[in-house]
Image (tube, rainbow, N blue to C red; front, side):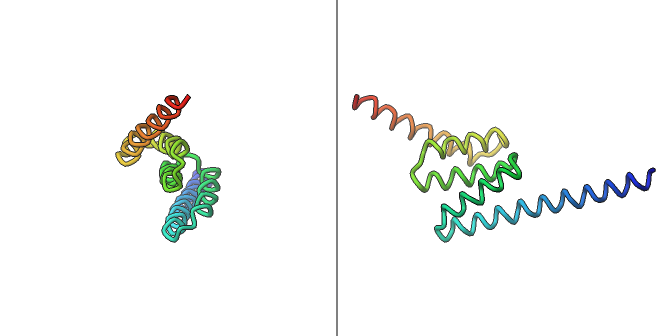
Length: 115
């Protein structure tokens, strides 16, 4: 019984390493797509990664960055908030969240002034 348990532990460790490597590879591929301006493709890959691994804060941080580049500030803010929920210590996500909050508050106030 002890041998079977050790085997199962080893198999689980291998599966865990494979999942981590796949996640890291996906993040690098997304980064490459962003660098060459293929933002829509990068977003598709991010969503796929988030479906498979919903607790990877870096995917939401990257998603927020893409939405920011696309001037979609509300969606960028939402993505950075998700990243912070998963990794509250991330200073970059925190700073972007604060910055985007100031942008979205400013644009909301302008819209209210136009009514």
